[in-house]
Length: 280
Image 1: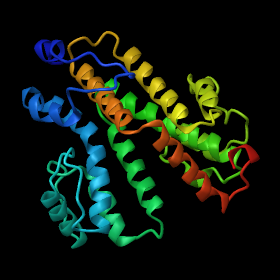
Image 2: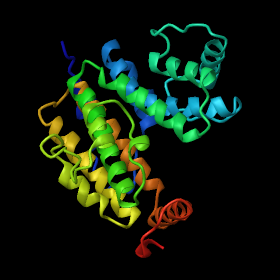
Image 3: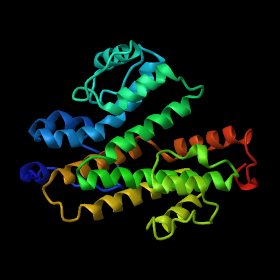
């Protein structure tokens, strides 16, 4: 049975994607509100914070002394211990460390990839698969939505630059398979992905910052619609965290930095694919 968080939700600040200042952070949430959650709901919220653990694991596998993001569920010491145990072939109980991370770390040492991007893609695929098995309908759907959205945008970009799409797709869903194999203009996904037209329009946006803003607006609208009737539940807290992180990211990224990032990406691609003149 769902637990209701009347006082917690009522006390949360109102957020909009256009906010330029925040008096509350993702880290604040964990410190102040996490202790008031039920055990079951903490595990749901943990799924959000695992994205930081993913990044931390990748860092520590490359450099055991790397500084990590403190927003994760695990400390550097805990992660180092888990990594060491798995490297030695020991097992780590699912109750203390997510099974997908154990799988990834074991694979990392047994079948090392030559490219860091392959490691990141493999970890992302495992993370999404793990999260989509969540019994909470909204949280599971949120991860499925993001996986589909990210993959469709990657496929559209790859097709535009005449790159091989299949190796770039993350995950093992029916949509993933369609993106890898279909030669149709819509990848055979019209009717299957109801926000496909929106993604096509977003993919045609040339300016990176504007494009990212449109992606986040799509995310924002989706989560608001999906939780319209979830007033004081853990789903509303999950949405608050997602929106809070989104705003934090935008506050830290100004337009000039975004344009510089875009140009650096294009510069990297120039050696590999034929870039249309308008991007040069």
